[in-house]
Image 1: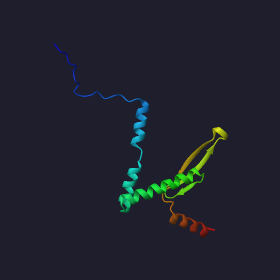
Image 2: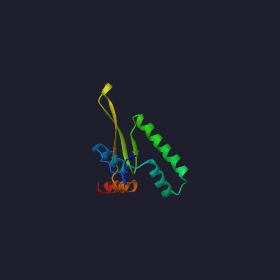
Image 3: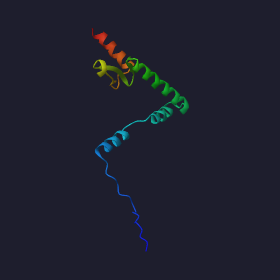
Image 4: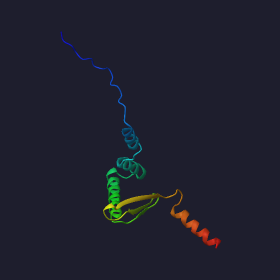
Length: 120
């Protein structure tokens, strides 16, 4: 007589640990570079290869600028500032993104400056 092990019809769903749940939620809320390529391709009508090369060059330049200790001002996104914390071996370099408020473009900023000059 041979015995066989029963084959389950469906696998039982595994419980996720709190860390795995947090990681899954973070990944679900993350925009990947491919999505940026796709969005810019549709928005501009350029070929995907051209968009990919331009975005990669832009990100590489921003990386070089930030690692050199310079701030990046990139409207309409905002400013990315280099912030050093601590000294010596305990020193850390942090990057702080200050998002630009919606509607604060060049035209509106110029109009606000003109209005301020008129009231003086």
